[in-house]
Amino acid sequence: MIPLPGASTDEARPLHIAWNHRWEHDKAPDVFFAALDDLVKSKLEFKVTVLGQRFSQSPPEFDSAFKTLSSLGAVVHWGYAPTKMEVRRRAAIACPAFE
Image 1 (cartoon, rainbow, N blue to C red):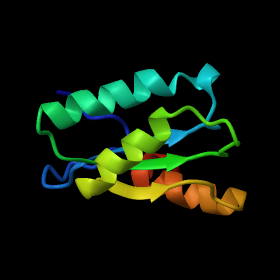
Image 2 (image 1 turned 90 degrees about the vertical axis):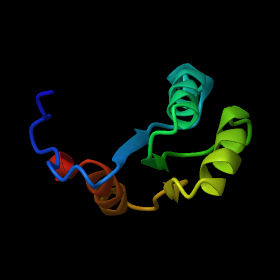
Image 3 (image 1 turned 135 degrees about the horizontal axis):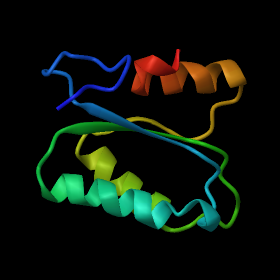
């Protein structure tokens, strides 16, 4: 396997996946969370950061995924980041190449 540019070569470090979109149906959260569910079922260790603006009618996948992933200790951050700098900081934690 060829690592992505800027990716950690520390194999002891779990995969860290980030969502950085608003919480709306048009962003296909069902596909994203189905992929994470596959990782859970495969018993692969990973961490997740879910950024983005939540609206009053957010897709239900967010709530059910939060319950599952937080119970596994996989959640690093879940929710809105109030500043662009905080979004960048959170994204850089998930993907060091983002810095």
